[in-house]
Every structure is written in structure tokens, then in C-alpha cells.
Length: 293
Image 1 (cartoon, one colour):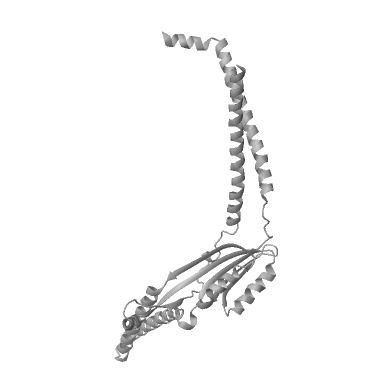
Image 2: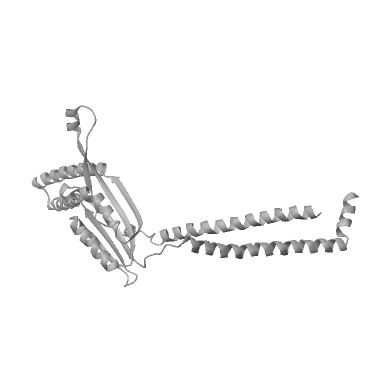
């Protein structure tokens, strides 16, 4: 009997220790994942996504077709694309880092095309849309990541070649329409027809001007890549040591392990008492007899 009791005691001890270790490991792992997700979500808002009519920057590069050299030179064309880098940073030296951003922008001959400052001292934000020469884009992008504490980065590249070709085709079509309308105007006619024709010519000219503005963004002298830089003011985050994480995990484990043990004991005691009452009232034997009948 003593041996039986001893083996049961060791088995129960092993299960109890295993449960304690599992709870501790779970809480320790949760401490790492929860702190990582909270730091990511801190600056999750996309400031530029809620703003319309931002300047669009386009760049181009030569595409050479494989095969015969002469044929390839004839088939060479410009690929138009939009390349955007988004950087989010946090700093405790807001004024100093703001000046540093603008100094770096100047040193790379980049252009600040949009600037928005928000908040009061201690909780300020600055959002910059910067156009930079495609050849300097990578260096500039990497350099800006060193400002403050980097929180989020993203680069997207969207091909705009078809859009550029469609705009050119539309321009040619509108120019032909304008030429035809101008020729009709020279033939004369009734005043009402002349006024209506003149209004139509003005409408077509406005379309042509708007199209010219869109195509102007694709011109070689306007070729830029875009960097969207958002910087938030805040205290520098301190890394949490493993000892502190282990201490918090241990405290949590002891608390909830004790709750599990107490709940299990109370549940077992309740079941035991109910069984005793049932036995005293001979409920179980009565049920057995009825089942046997």
C-alpha cells in the first residue's frame, strides 16, 4: 500500500510540475509576442493613405529586348514606373532629427513636395513626401532609416508604362478632334452653331490642358521616386530584460497555478460530498436495483 501511495504521489507530482512548466513557458512566450505586436501597432496608421491629390512621381528605365543587337536597339523603350518607399520612425530628439531629415534631403538634391506637422511638444508628428532622383533613391532611403528608431518600412513599385501610353494615345485623339473642330469653325454658319462649336472647342482645350499636366509628370526632367517619411515624437523605448520577463511570468504562473489547484480541490471535494450524500440516502443502490429490474 505504501508503494502504491508513493507511485501515485510521484505521478501526481510529475503532472503538477509539468503543468507548472507549461504555464510558465506560455506566459514567457506571450510576453515576447505581446510586446512585439504592441510596438508594431503603435504607429499602424497610414497618414498618407487618407490624403488625396498628393503629387505623383514617376521614373523610367530602358527595356532592351533580347536577340539581335540591331533589332534590340530598335525595340528599346522606356518603362515608366512609380516607386514609393514608406518609412515610420520614432524619436525622443524631435527637433534635432527634423533638422537632420531636411539636411539630408538637401544633400541628396531631393525635394520636399508635401509637409504636415501635427501635435504639441511631447507628442508631435511630422509627415514628409519627398521626391528624390531615381539614381539616389536607394542611398537616400537607407540613410533616412538611421534617423530615430525605425518602426516600419515598405517599398512598392508599380508599372505605369501602359498608363503612359494610353495618355499619349488619348492626347493624339483629342488633338485630332480639336483640329477638326477648328476647321469647322473656319467654315462659318449660324451664330447659335458657332457659339455651340466654340464651347465645344473650349471644352476640348481644357481636356488637352489637363492631359498635358498628367503627361508632364512623366517628363524626364520631372522624374523622381517618392519617399514618404513619418516621424513621431516619444520617449525611446527600453528593451525588457529576460530576468524581468521571467519574474513577471513566474508571478503570473504561481497565481494561476494556485487558482487551478484550489478550483480542482474544491471541485473534487464537492463531488466527494455529493457522492457521500447519495450513498447515505441510498440513491445509488436504489438506481442500481431499478436498472437490474
